[in-house]
Length: 116
Image (cartoon, rainbow, N blue to C red; front, top):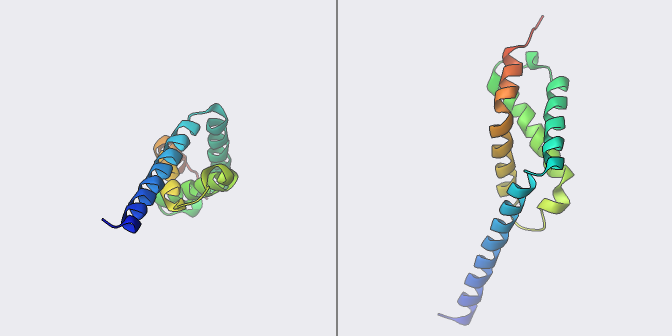
C-alpha cells in the first residue's frame, strides 16, 4: 500500500473518531440540566406559539414543532456542536432524541386542540 493511501485511511479513521466523539459529547450534554431545561422551555413555548388548528394532521404539527426546536437548539449551541465536518449527522441525532422525548406531548396538544 502506498504511503498516500495509508495517510488517507488514517485521516478517515480520525474523522470517524471525531464524529463519534461529538456524538458521545452531545448525548452526554443532552442529559445535563441546563440542556433539559432549555429543551423543555423551547418545546413548551413553541406549543404555546404555534396553533395546532393550522395543521391538518398531528404528524405535520409534530414535524413543525420539532424542526423549529432542533433548528433553535443547533443555532444556540452551534459553537459547541460544529467544529467541522458533517452537520447533518448531528442534526439528525438531535431530531431523533427530541422526537423520542417530546412527540407524545406534542401530539397530545394537537389531539386536545379546540378550533373554531
